[in-house]
Amino acid sequence: MSRVALVTGGSRGIGAAISVALKAAGYKVAANYAGNDEAAAAFNKETGIPVYKWNVADYEASKAGIAKVEADLGPVDVVVANAGITRDVPFHKMSPEQWQQVIDTNLTGVFNTVHPVWPGMRDRKFGRVIVISSVNGQKGQFAQVNYAATKAGDIGIVRSLAQEGARAGITANAVCPGYIATEMVMAVPEKVRESIIAQIPAGRLGEPEEIARCVAFLASDDAQFINGSTISANGAQFFG
Ligand code: CAA
Image (cartoon, rainbow, N blue to C red; front, side, top):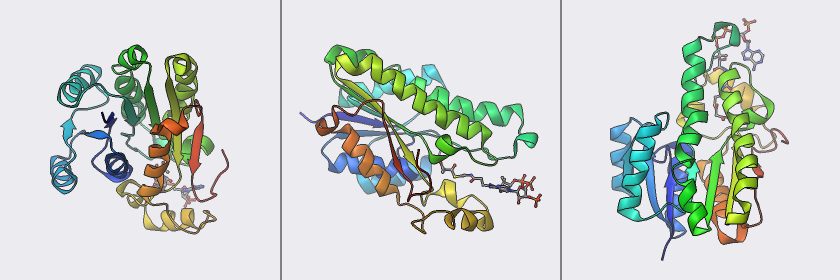
């Protein structure tokens, strides 16, 4: 029987590529999304992957949404915590709201996504937790004190979960994408984006599928002994 995979933020950007790659690898995939109904409907029409709307920053909504996924598809074996936002602004201008929104979605959102599926993974003695971190969690980034804090936090989360889950057949790993050609990166002012690309030895942005293939590998049985690690996919921009 095919395993069930849940991808948060799974209908756009890197998350959409992950959903598609996991479906192609034989998983029953559920793609969560927070707000963009139009994009989610288009994604569902194009891929046939069911979409589920909830805000990962809300614990009760996450629990209810995951319960619906499990009722429809079966217990979640693979969870990909991918949903994330940016509120880029230099620190001296950062408001408490801009700090909190990013913490709530990117960091607390990982807790809210993994916590409801963790007991079932422990009971069934199998699980894959894959958290999408970032090169900017490894190296920091101008105007991203909030975002970098959450992405560095992801690494602490998987290293801790790995130790707790190892004997129950659960692995927890992070993927640290560099700058990938998605709406999030395209929202960076063009001049700034060009200067960032100039610092990437590969000389280009990554493709979402290049991250999705890392996730598909970490989800596979072949990756059982890889636990608490990070895979960096950034075109040699940084060695974390
Ligand atoms: N290093 C050093 N200085 C920098 C800088 C950098 N990386 N980026 C901008 N600056 C400087 C500018 O040159 C400018 O200096 P001057 O005032 O001397 O001209 C100053 O900072 C800009 O300050 P402002 O107060 O005018 O900045 P702003 O309020 O207009 O904000 C910005 C501009 C938000 C910082 C904008 O430059 C930006 O979006 N930067 C990109 C941040 C970034 O890389 N985000 C990643 C998004 S993608 C992502 O997050 C996915 C992932 O995981 C990789």
